[in-house]
Picture 1 (cartoon, rainbow, N blue to C red):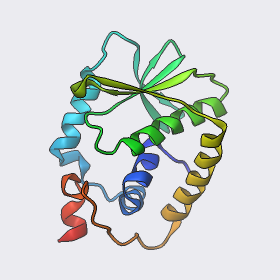
Picture 2: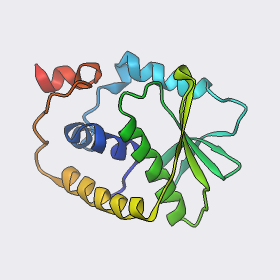
Picture 3: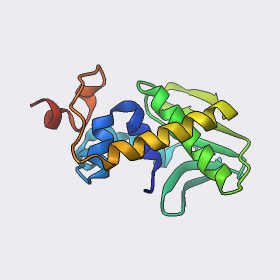
Picture 4: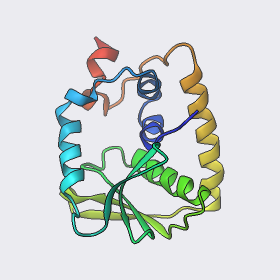
Length: 163
């Protein structure tokens, strides 16, 4: 199974959203918050590095500076742990391909905030466990039941899950 950065992000945000995404049930194209995030991603840090680097038709890195630093750009830090692990997945994937990235940065242009994201041997072990769990969730014949969280009301799937 091919795992994308979005899938890793959704794993930490909502396992149901992950399953729905994998089964091509999507509502995000019309979600205004998702559209705003896309515009922010496209217009932030225009002169700092190579933007939207797609690798193996699988991962799409927001920005890479000199093939040394990987950036993930987010509009909000509301689901920061998911964003951190998405960025760590990019570091994991690139290192598996032999590309020695020195570090990751999680950028919040609207908040004028940037966080260094390290990738350790412990992260490597955890990532491999998470990837196995992602595969199990996506391969399941039925989606997980919805679990109401504070982030749900801003999700494109909210009405689908809770109406």
